[in-house]
Structures are given as C-alpha cells and as structure tokens.
Image (cartoon, rainbow, N blue to C red):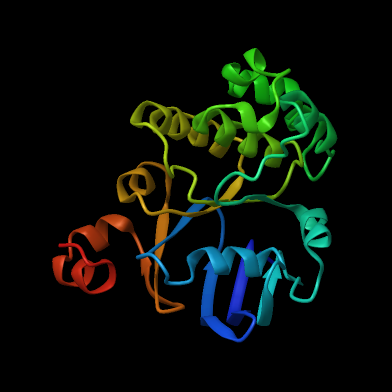
Length: 237
C-alpha cells in the first residue's frame, strides 16, 4: 500500500498562548510542494510544528508514522532535513565542519548518498570557502551551506523555509538549478516561500495559508489565472 510522504490532520500549533496554526490539513504525496501566503499567516510556524519545535496538537504522519510528540532530533532521525528561515549556521564551525559533523548515512543508498564531496560538486563556491566559518559567508553562500547541511543527513523529505529570502536574482537562478538536480534524486521537498516566480519554477503544486489554515491547494498557474482568488488569498491580482 502506498504511504504518503506527509499527512497533516487538524494540526494546531502555538507560541505560548498564541494560537498560530489553526486546523491545518495537508497531504504531500511526492515531489516538490510549496506553501505560500502573506506574512503572519502561520507558514513558518507550520514548518516548526512538523519539526517538533513548537507546541503542537493534531496528527502529523511521516510515511505513515506519527511524529507529533517526538523531539526535533528524533524527527530528523526519521528522515526529515530542515533548512530554517535565516539559515542558522553555526558561527564556530567552518563550512567543512558543518558538512562533516552533520553527515549521516540516512535513508539514501550508497550510490546516491549525499556526502560533503557531492555537496561541493553541487555548490563549487562552498568548496572555495570550506575553511571559512559559516557566518562569515555571503547570504547566498550561507543558504548553500544550510541546504548542504540538510542534504548530508540524507533525508527522505527536505523542508525549506524562505530559501530565496534576501538573495540576489543570480543566486536565485542558481538555486533553481540546484533544486532541479535534487529533484532528479527523487528527493521530496516542501518549501515555504514568498517569491511566487521562484515557486512556479521549482514546485509541482502549491498550498496557500490564510489565518493559520490551508485555503487553497492546487497548481500555482491555476491560482495566477484566477485574479479574484489571487486577490482574496494573496492580496495580488
């Protein structure tokens, strides 16, 4: 029987007493899916709920296994790699140390396994910077490192929170190429993003969050072609 990659049922998430995510239902079968929406709608909080980083109720199943209630490191061990908003690289570790210390055999076969060498092939700029500390890099290089750090865990699902944020158009173009290469490895990816053009270039389907709930699921093209719906959900038209 086919198991969905990620199944969320009536997920609620909180910051202290603030009720941010309010009954989210979401199904991720495979491929690359995005979550879009205006600021403050709960997108990043939902990613943190999946990773066990905020107080969460409801059900989140990863390949059929319940993960609500697990600690973040246990969720990572199940095969979810997380690239948080703002990259969050370690200031005391070099690029090479990030990739070495985070490496795990994970869930990839030996011939498809992500290693530091494969990450350097994917991001040649990181190889040139491998002896520099993680926070001394440019914004684009830090994003490359954050993605590489998640890849060497060899996860079954990659979560990325605002991967294009603050990046120059040329770096975004590089990220589009990178995601195309990662997709060929049959990596499942869930992206939270503000840049609709970026989403349209890299994702198969999208979900729109409004006030802590999923208000639309489908193709981004369908959303773009419906001016009234785009204006209602995203404030654009």
